[in-house]
Image (cartoon, rainbow over all chains, first blue to last red; front, side, top):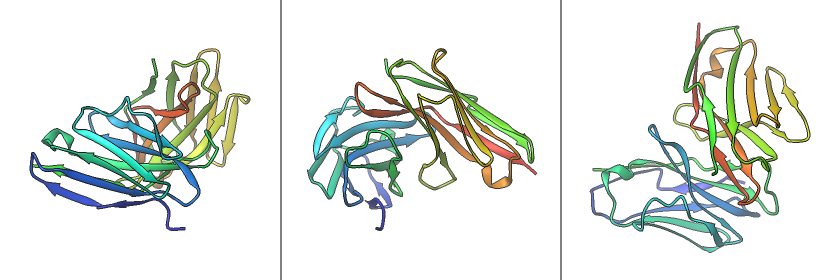
Length: 115
Length: 112
């Protein structure tokens, strides 16, 4: 298995533009988490899905952020409109089905820069 | 609320010495505590975890201890080596929400 796949790996955009980050979980993993990492705030949980259903989106900073998981093999995190303070590394992580404990498998991350 | 406190934020030790990172959590129902290591420019990866039914777990040079009464848990790295330089995150599983909350991270530097 290729592991958790994220795209793009790097994104540079201008303030006000829409940004879409993508994640493909490991096959058979039915829990998916989106994190944001910055120097100031560390690793923050934004939202997580279980069986494609959003369970907790309390970490989503503003209405400009939205996430979807239309099927078991794909999720998106969208920022519209983007702002410079959204610059961060965004990680997707997945967990095998039925397991609350155990390793979260992180993707390589998307480094977002908003100018 | 859901919170994991981690200290120190930075730690520098001489190669060969030990390093200790400490965390506290707020949810008394938490029963799973993983530790992740993140090397520069890489993704976080699990290095060790501990469940609430044990007080200590070892894996070669790494050990974790858990004090459920005090809601403290710690990571101990002995005989540190240059490749131990990284950011280390503690975390706790919040049972009510089935989600992992991460500490703020400790940047560990090993001096040659």
